[in-house]
Amino acid sequence: MPRGIALVGSGSATPSQKLTNDQLGLRVETNDSWIQSRTGISERRVSSPAEKLSVLSYRAADSALNMAGWDPNSLDLIVLATSTPDDLFGSAPQVQARLGALNAAAFDLTAACSGFLFAFITAAQYLRNGSMKRVLVIGADQLTRWVDWDDRKSCVLFGDGAGAVALEGTDLENDGLIGYKLKSDGSRGDCLNLNQIENSLPLVPGISHQKGGFLPIQMNGQEVYKFAVREVPSILDELLLVNKISPDSLDWLLLHQANKRILDAVADRFSIPHEKVLSNLANYGNTSAATIPLMLDEAVRDGRVKPSNLIACSGFGAGLSWGAALFRWQGRL
Image (cartoon, rainbow, N blue to C red; front, side, top):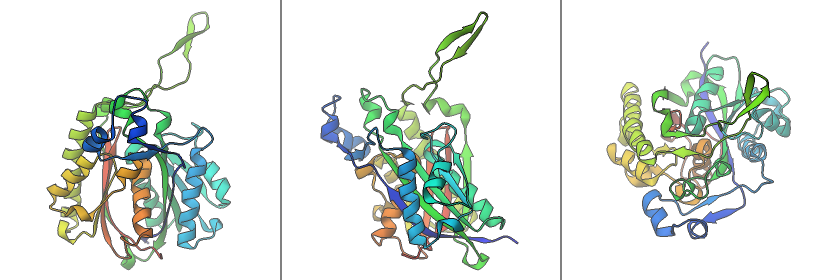
């Protein structure tokens, strides 16, 4: 029988190093006023060489488990949304081992800045069909390792972090996941990418191979902005309409934290007061797959998000990919 889904725990973790706009101005020709006026970002967290993505992910996951009150051995699945794993073969199993979640399967999912939302919806299907009971969804990225720190248009945007949400199956009467939509358009993927280096080397006579490696993040900021302000309101509008929910009944709007202008534009499109828009962009910048769970955890722990609050959520980014979900928070904090 189909089952409902309850969001019962959250957690987050960030690197200890803070990089302010003024400090960044020591590296490239920029300043705090220029960055804040165009992005809304004041500072971001930068992982040290010793800080692994799997450790940040573990810290966020452990915090979510503690809030939910779960024993790690009760977990059935761990899904890690990331584009920057420690190991290209996947970092989720390392998180599983650190947690001691001996009964959980674990895998990575890559959808860039949409990653957490895509992972959340993927994990929800295992709970919905009753094949699993408890799942951890983690969004984590370390994009500061892949930016060109001499490109002032892109290096100011990104930071590192991790966030996690604990989901469990429940009866349909208490279903917290009201609806969702996911979309992709690979024809526009060249707007934002992190491509392999084209490095052809001879292997044996008549055969060449490519040595692995990646270029820094390449981004057409104007096109990404136009994409976000067009597609995010559209998909949210579709979702609200099909579920017969009016924007003024929402408690919170929770969007991928990419740019303050995007957050404001989407809120204005639905006449949602800006005080109902959850944002910590100023303190962390764009942490890619981590932005949504990082923001959710902060708002849960400081008391803004309360049990039964209705949240409209949207993630968007490279691929191009985007999506939206309507859910109620049911955590115990």
